[in-house]
Image (cartoon, rainbow, N blue to C red):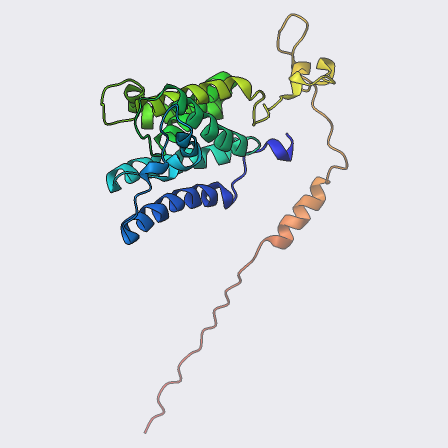
Length: 260
């Protein structure tokens, strides 16, 4: 297995996702501290001024609750992307952010759309579908973990709440699904066993040599032991290693008292 295709932890697996989330909190703190409203920089569908929101909208949030609800899944899913898909992580994240914003701009209601929830749906969709399509147990397990943790988010790609940008959720979900198809190849090289190699010769396999052509087990003759140690030498070595404890008793008679 090549070194490039091995799963390997590095500080950037947590570093970049943490930095991404930290920027969101800094932007929100800046708004609250200096009484500035960045909401007009969100996506306003099908307007020229609304195009700037494609870049800026993921960093803008309307409330502390809105920011917190996006921060935790954004950190977890981005860290998973950076660990399991290190070769394509920046492409998925940056291009996904761009295309999610464009799709939201194209299909959204005439209102301001802000928040990183579209990116969250992008990552969840990509990690799930890519893991299922890969047919590798590590990535499939990751896909199932995503469903277990964030499967309930699926309802919000539908217009169940007029205060939520379901168009942004749907856009991220669709872009993640498309990326799962477009980015071919598996980030983890499948382990090949000895019998799967091209240079494998069944006749040289020690295990198969224990069976005849009909599959019956045959007992192979035991190989002679080279340079056996003579039994006399073994006994001599055992005698030398045996510790003998010798106890010697001496009896001393007590002199009788002399007569007065």
